[in-house]
Amino acid sequence: MEECISDIQCNVALNCPGNQQYSTCHGCTVPCSDRDSPEPCPRICQIGCYCPPGTYLLGEQCVSRQQCETAQSCPGNQIYSTCAGCDVTCSQRNDTIACAAVYTPTIFVSVMNNVMFAVAEDCPGNQVYSLCASCDVTCSQRNETIACAAVCRQQCTCPPNTYLQGDLCLTNEQCDAAAACPNNQVYSLCAGCDVSCADRNNPGPCTLQCRQQCTCPSGTYLYMEECISDVQCNVALNCPGNQQYSTCHGCTVPCSDRDSPEPCPSLSNWLLLSSWNIFTWRTMCF
Image (cartoon, rainbow, N blue to C red):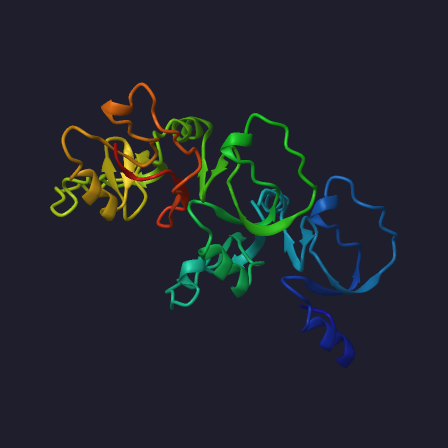
């Protein structure tokens, strides 16, 4: 500069934050938010750090009008920097990332800590982490009016215009497809190839491509349109005569009792299939 200042003033000048400048006689610094309607500034010389004419204060930085507009459009909780480095994603936070030391006015993420990163990485299905989540609406609730308290929640949630189905966030069309899944099949955004009971010990080749469709849960096999376990496949493939296998049937009536069948209990022999958490009736041939 070209000013002569005292030792105390030197300390102030050398510690001006950001790219602010020191002056022994400056006016008022205008923040970005007030750039179109600045407060009146009294004609008094002030000693201190300030933004040069034609710039506005953003945090501790002096930025142009255009940079103010860019900063106001930063998405989420990102903030604007006049000299940002490289953004590191959650999955990269423990890696050594090469970043070119280039002066780059840009926006960058700054608010998530390691605990939030860990939670974000564990979001199930295709859910995303939000610092201010609302209430998730399920596929079955999407046409209803759901009361939701106006409270920000830091949690995994569904992106806008999607609905929760199990751990997945589905579009309206995908919700309809999921509701039409037959029997105990489930909807998947990235299904592989279903293996039938008959082919379970010698499955055919499956092309490596995601399929959005109804499918069998992991560890189960397709029989007719039902997904059953390996043990159930053994029973199904060995049904005698022309009997059929079912995971939910009533009582088989012999010819001799066809005119006066025995009572058939309606709530007996429940079996919990823990592999995909559903209850079913007797599993046998009939």
